[in-house]
Length: 271
Image (cartoon, rainbow, N blue to C red; front, top):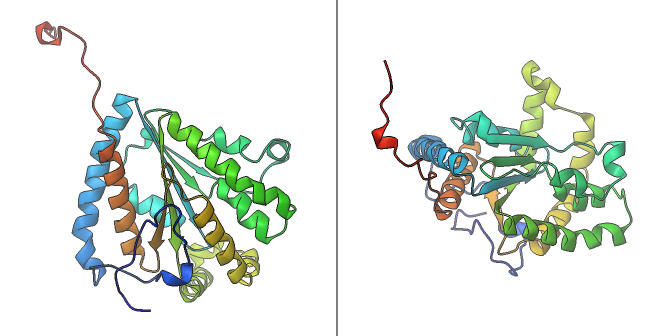
């Protein structure tokens, strides 16, 4: 596939075919060293914007990371959010639902983890698992997961109406890159814990997962909660792209520090 310019954010209503998106795309950058300065600048800016977000307590930001196994969700959190004040961020990794969670609607456990005003929330996997793995692994009948797209759109609209800005990223890796990352997990003892035989079972259903992701990208790409398709074969480019989107998103919120208490200029701090 050529390195011709490709969109990051498909327009709502525009048909998405993942075959049209090159996971190895790097835009105008040819190598990691060319992107480092821009990444550092973005991370520094993110730290500044997060401080104002936290102090102002008027907005919240929810970052949703979805990807196939080894797609880079953990690495994105580690590298992009480097330098962010931990007290202003909450990260949630959604695992297999518990018995209590299964006794409620599929969004019950998700809503509890959405960020309050002033905070950045990061979902490592999310409610989209209920139209992805649940669909491919046939955990519920088609009539159940098919209805969930509308529920998700309504849920995300509710969040935005409540002051939460959503930014959704699909970390798009190639099957060849996933193979390399799996092999690294097998050869490096420090990464053995990240490998599971279940990963191979899901890899064998690659095409079915691609179809499920395409439907999620097409049916839940809304003006209030847009999807971004991030080329993720090159980790450095993935980090750069996501950091840039987050900076631009927070800057659009016109964040401000709260007004100071009146009369501060007359206060004298005693010895």
